[in-house]
Length: 159
Image (cartoon, rainbow, N blue to C red):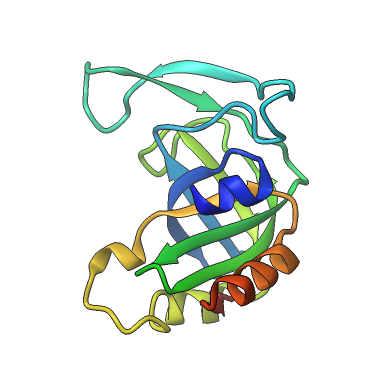
């Protein structure tokens, strides 16, 4: 929510899966905002699908995010550290291949290093540190740097 207020944009919260052979990070979840460019923007196209993890139960949007879009991925940990990285959406799978319906595949700087160090910069035994990064359209790393400086926090650039 903090980064949403700073950027005035919605974020897509999802779990990460790495494919180091392609130097990419998959982000997937079964809830997703339609207006990633801001409240007044045009909504992204979407399909309504059955919830892929619970057979015959519920309905979720499969949002078709913009291929070629630069993104910033963030997570606030323990109100003192902001994890952040950038990437570019290179694929929106035509069908759900890793459980959750809405999925993006982002090219990152170094997926192997990112996967090996995922969550390790945080002194925490909380497994939630490994889950749920929030993706925002555009490169907001300068904003992240300014934010942590203003709030007296630490920035960890993942990958």
